[in-house]
Amino acid sequence: MAASLVGVLALTACSGGGDSDGDSAPSTAPTSNDTGSGGTGGGSGGGSASSAGELEGSWLATTDGKAVALVVTGDKAGLFATGGSVCSGTAGEQGGKRTIRLQCTDGSKDRAAGTVDSVGKSELKVTWEGALGVETYTKAEGGKLPTGLPTAGLGS
Image (cartoon, rainbow, N blue to C red; front, side, top):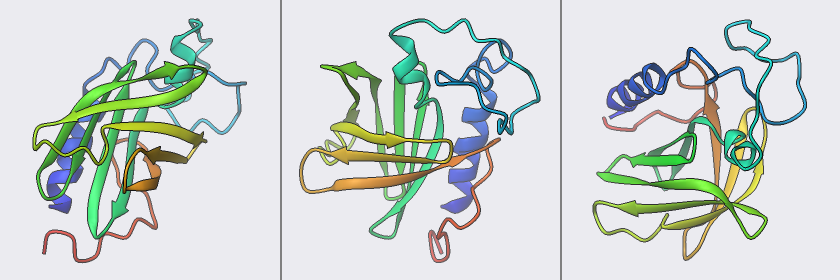
């Protein structure tokens, strides 16, 4: 399963038009710690897209022993979890809060609606409505699993 998760991340990293404004268009104040491809980006940020832009990328978590990958590209969101959950939906702003809305193919409502508590360079916290509660994700850079992510025993 860990290998298939890496495959999903690799495909995600390859798709999504990274040439023009993908990785190097942060929506917050510019920083010098961009580990992307060295461009200065010079973002032409649009107003409402900026809140979703902070969420852009591949985010990984381990919840209840299952690997979870949340991928945000523009205002689109997708989530994949070991065990078969595949969800798609939107990421954006609603009522002044950043939100993620998903529909899962297995009918699960665990991650149907979430509010972003915080998003930083390497960490994303989402509070999902319902029993799941807060889930903390680590950003995956360049389609690689981040260091420190507990992956032992997943899929073996």
